[in-house]
Image (cartoon, rainbow, N blue to C red):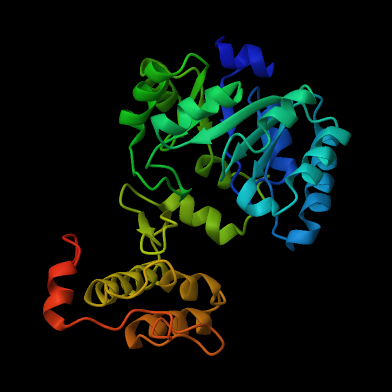
Length: 331
């Protein structure tokens, strides 16, 4: 048994917290982690459901978990997944007897004070020192600093766990949990040596029998080596680490082409361009159209064109060359 401020605050035996993992954090997995001495976490959208149904979906998974364990449980509140009414979701968690929440994907100030008024212990996921300080100022009890090695959506600053953990520990007085690249006892010892008082693990739990993801995905996790992941979606501001598959590599090629196109056409309104990409359906055909939109510089039907009357007239080629970002590759 390892005792830290994290174990004392959360009432657990081992300072290991299950990552939220969006659709993968089902009730059975959360109960198994808690029974093992860690802190099981029911995600914001286990199994995936419509946004209007997610609160009730989480309620059902919490009830499954509570039927399997009497130890502490936590609920993840990803503000990106919950939608426009996070207070309703929080009310449901209180009704189900949840005492610990971990927030992510937004400002810690959105729900922290409300959750504290309910008597909940609040953790928040951060990706840099500035976010950690803001979390402490908002009243968060524990910060989870997630480094670049983590699976899923990454922080835009791409700070590694080795750099992030000691930096956050030096910047705040509240307990710090390390996340990103931890999946063994040796990793936990390393995190503790860097000043963290616990770790968050996600990918390692995906391959367990109680996790409800597909068996092929579990096998891919086990078979992955040190180069078994790839970064995608950097172009649209949602940098993500995923298993390296032919589809993931093709996706990265498309976004690289989009980046080169944007550099050559940098005079276009920057904020409106990525919206075309985000709004396209996430299907195979949709992905193909998504890439073609950027290559041909044409918006899909019904969406405003960057060449509309509200846009500036295109400058000369010499002006484009002068204004091209330094990071752009040559043609």
